Image (cartoon, rainbow, N blue to C red; front, side, top):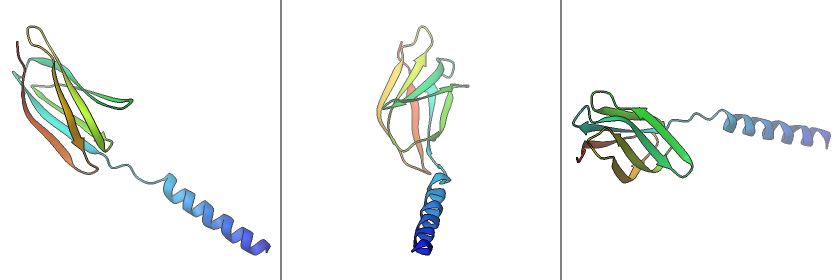
Length: 105
């Protein structure tokens, strides 16, 4: 009986350990802002998670984003208006390219 309990405990510990160190792959979201100097930063929002990244020479990238559906907000500089892209799908190990995002004045 003691041996059975010890074996079950060992199996439970190994199972827990395997899941505790499971790697998080994530996906990514990329895009390009037109005009290139029209924005400072971009935000990706899903549920209570918010990611923030800089816009550099018009390009932005969110790496290691959890799989899910995001709303991406481009924080525009004056005289441009912020842009919002909804329903952006991210899958583990995949890159989601939003292409060119033209900012309105």
